[in-house]
Image (cartoon, rainbow, N blue to C red; front, top):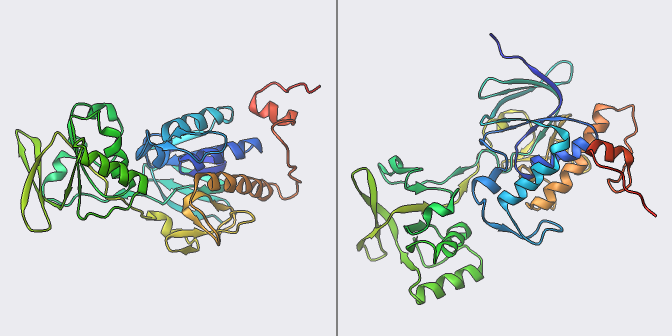
Length: 348
């Protein structure tokens, strides 16, 4: 039996924070959306890479984690009953003769939508892996490229590879919780915030953690368990470091994937948009968040939130060109209160 094609007014590609807020902005204009994401849960990179890492630049929220931000956004969009299609990637997108857009996912699910919003972050991101023959057998057992449950690292001998913010953030976080923390980096120069670097060096001086300068060149395993990582230092000397868990943070390798084949105007792996509407070079397709580019672009979550509002209004006008789309305020609009399912306040 062939899968049924879903017909809708809007499809959002990407369920990160910006994609989730796009649901909200469309919902205020009574446009309901289907959401597709390659990850198994909503939240994008915030949940996949740093669910417990604090975020400080969300307006009116002094601090929250990536998971908390995602949970709040999911709560905020509850009135709009968006339909999520997770664990699958959009592999094809094409314009039909009637102007609508046809999409197909890696699981064979098909959509016909009047508008599409690409909120895919940096694209199909992939962690840069540790290149040691055979070590991939321990991936998601003792070798990890992201931390989903820090509690499991308590009392463990943890070795962390990398010299950026993620590596140092987790090293600092685990000191005092893990049995031991060893940081390995190829050189004594780090691409992290000065404060994190200073904290790391202070902890090394007090012997609360250890810094090893060198390259991982081998490993040892026993009874199907990874027992040590072997590091060659700048003098060519080999050192074996015992471990229980190995965290590797070599950064991400962003890949546009199928998006590159959809006929959109692309500049340096990013989608070019009109900043008045955030429409791409193809009418009816919009791009918001880190996936887009324009003069003055800043890759911040709060910038993406702003972009979703303009994209939603532009889409509403695209869907109903004969209708004037008024600007309403959630504070005073009884219509928006009805849409949100809240009681209109009485002002005296």
